[in-house]
Image (cartoon, rainbow, N blue to C red):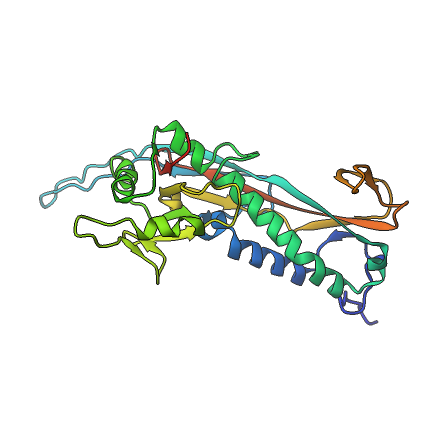
Length: 295
């Protein structure tokens, strides 16, 4: 007996309207989301083993070494351990298309929808995990910086960048990245030390020898600069991306030009709902600081 397999170049959208994305499609979407999301680029991945919550232990204080004489017992420390819980939340997007898309092969349909899914997913992940906007998670990078009093107000210049770094060094945090946006680059180039030398390396996109990662979102304001050690930002993805296609009902969050809701049946349209689950968590207080020009 021949076992039939899903062939996206032959199977029509109308023949498979819900379930999990074909494995190759999920891999492509997750790869492109990870290539664009700063949370996923800079943060540390935690395996969630297919579960909505993952508990793990964090060591907050290190252990010490001791000088000892021959045959002398080596002293031991009791490290400070706390339990953290990474909780995944559901992120969804609804896209609409002409009813004709039901006659597309899944490969063609996926190629047209993928850029919108990727763009929406990675921006929402970063806006929540980094900026704390519409944030379903326990904390965010910006919240940690604010709660620890590590927010500096002022323009991007040499003196304020040093103050930003100093906020971290005071707590023995070695920054390994800045989060910025491309519109900040003119100001970064003008950040000059006492010898009038810029501390921004345009060729390598580094500031004071530390990598600068540009966030692709309108929600991060021009003049905002976040610094920290992103090893203390963790994330996990427990499940594959799922989808469902509908041909009926109204889309209350989408409007026609006359401000009426889109009616799929009446307008001969379809909607695809794609969802993914992801957890994001900052696991160390005082690991981040922020420079902002905003009041």
